[in-house]
Length: 260
Image (cartoon, rainbow, N blue to C red; front, side, top):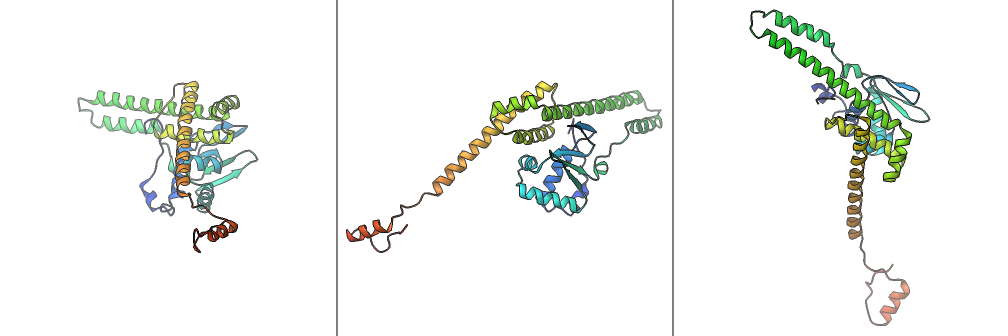
């Protein structure tokens, strides 16, 4: 991804949980959402490789049931992929080997190595052009990280702004916990779509627009499911014993008439 990405080694296909689709999906989501720098959240420092969440939020964001989320979290704890610390307000998940997964190489070392490679071929006429290209690439990486940091700040601002969340609640009529889960889902969506916002207001307006579409989609799906279920649950009329006796005495029906 251009502005935000995570590293996943090919050896993950040999990981012991790879065939467990729920556990693998959940772990990938945790890698995507974990903060890549230390931040403050409600008086606590959330360190690089950690995230604040709950089973309900993870369930809504991944489409995995809360029961399966609990099982997958236990799986990841068992093999020391994560640790979980709960408070009376929220849960902090730590990815134990985050630095191994997302090790950031020193840019200055990269530039020095590239410049050394250029100097060994000083007889080439395009050396100045290559150096400019390297400088441009380094600058581009810095801008990309800056945009990613800014996006992360917008995410936490939205998560922590009680006044704004109350306004959102009035707009869409859902509970605060659901709003928190949808903010997580929206953040993951923006990362996957490489979407970047130029201001806090831009982020929040986009979230509300996205949320209304999500809720409309979910409502339509619920209505479809209700219609389907209602159609399949139509049943024959069931008669009481007295009604059956009356029908038999009148010469209508037979002994096979359904009793209710």
